[in-house]
Length: 100
Length: 375
Image 1 (tube, rainbow over the protein chains, first blue to last red):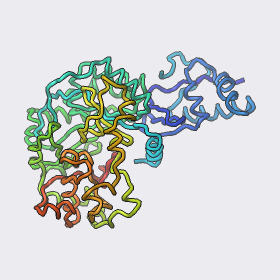
Image 2: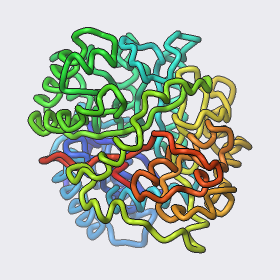
Image 3: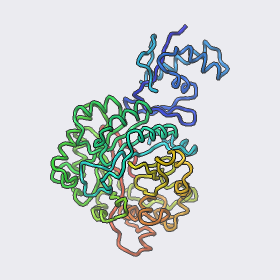
Image 4: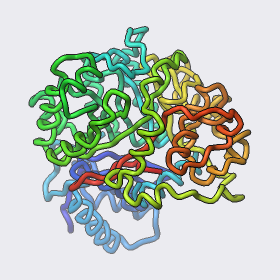
């Protein structure tokens, strides 16, 4: 069972455009767009809710997908976003929380 | 513009979303630039609370890129409170325009901490006697350049914004060299904007046709001169249906008093955020809808002009000349300086061209050119 926690990096700029998040990296102004699943993860990434719970409550209820497979995909997405400085990830709750 | 931003802009256009807004926080300023189009008296600026409310509404409306400008933004005592709210509470991508003379190490570090996309700083010359004579503030060039270095040392993206006019015509290459030496970007804009009250006397500060022709043939600025100065085919059927610019389509401007306009250079009042919600003005204003309805085919003189396929006609400048569907003489003059072919407007008026245009400049290494490159 994954114990990953995710938090939005408050240094990025972000806006939802027609259901998809536009994100601009705070470090190098690179622009990203997130697909609908990644957008759900981003919007739920408060630093306190485990990724597993986000997947179970927000993704599996939205899409016909096996929970374990969805979690694997979500972890991959989260690590990818973290590599660009868009999300913070940790094995522990992220106490400083995410951008509102 | 990156492909992704272009894609997002197209999506915003289709969904009627104001992707980009310039918000002037104040018209007060600590410089008195000879070419400035603003009235610097405070006629009732929005309060901190009003601006935060507006930022809430803009975020809700989908605004992503927020340019904070003025006047001089740092003369507002609540500037950092507003910036922090915009960035950290509402996640705007924030660009700043400033003369930077109030930015020292402390302010630069704070900007780095909060995070801004870029800071454009007005630099009119590399020589104090020229720059300071334009700002009318002794020592202003030194203070602005000190700030450029403080910001650069924080790793922030800095752009020197230069306005070309009679006073500094000989200095733009020196400003570019200075930018290159410091390692920041540089833009050049020969547009002198009429005063917001309609007074056009400042236009006399614009450079003349000969100077403009020289600038347009400066390889360092325009790249391939032959290509830049080539005569393009007039607009075809699709071109005639094209939008004039982003004003009122995916972008707009809000004054320090809450007035909403299609663009900072298009002073057509469409509503006030003290009386209506921002998005209601954006979506429902009849004037905004009128601006939005105009296509090249609707322009009385320009639709049949030989430059219609390549002209950078500014609808706001046309509006300030008296007709938002009419020509913008400054852009006619630009096309003329570039190609040597008079515009339909110039032929109709049968007069010698005046002297104002708008261009961008080629990038200064090692950084890239901001949006708004030579068109």
